[in-house]
Image 1 (tube, helix red, strand yellow):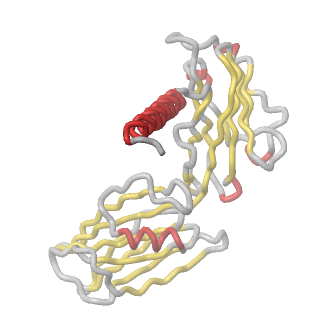
Image 2 (cartoon, one colour):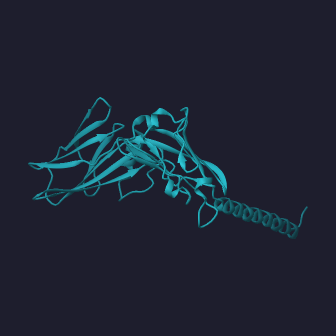
Image 3 (cartoon, rainbow, N blue to C red):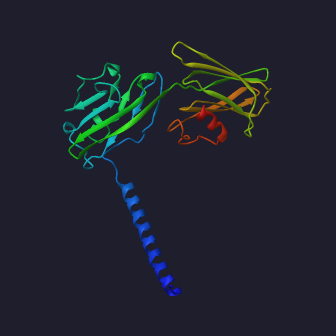
Length: 277
């Protein structure tokens, strides 16, 4: 039978091994996190607004402060599931012989900044079929690598508020996918409202929503229009002269994740309602 001293001794040995292993693990994690990929995107899940332009971020690490020789950098953008390239740059010029027709005259990078490591792609007039995973591949004297960008596509617009005989309404012209609408008062209590959705031939919705209860001067009401990609949060203050409103947009990292940031505090149950429907 082991003595108390032996138990303490072996206990200390085991503890030393555990602490040592934990320290090694921490150093390994810290070291791994400091390793930066040669090619990376600082915005891996952008949301493009239908009809607008969107920038797909991609950059690579140059060998020094002076950058890379421009004629020694080649860049290829591709989209998963499509033949051909989205855009190819080589020898200081676009090489578009095998460009997919979907991106003709709609995609470009900026040659003046390629040598500094910026190879982001500008995609013009975004539409629903542009959604998907894009891969940015770079070959340069300092290395080679690639990274992916998952482009999500939506339509969103700020609502316009009108006040008619103490009845507050909001109309938003462009939303896709179909959103949800919620109203709250200045302390976050849910309010009753009537909302109507009208979609055009492209499937984009126009929303008209009206509070069912009379509103009061100098009170502020919050209208949230949201789907699983984007949310607009509007604060409308009723005054004797009409309505003063401001709107903030937030974008979700992924359909099942919370937004990256909030412009201001919004009740969590409203976000859950937007994300789960």
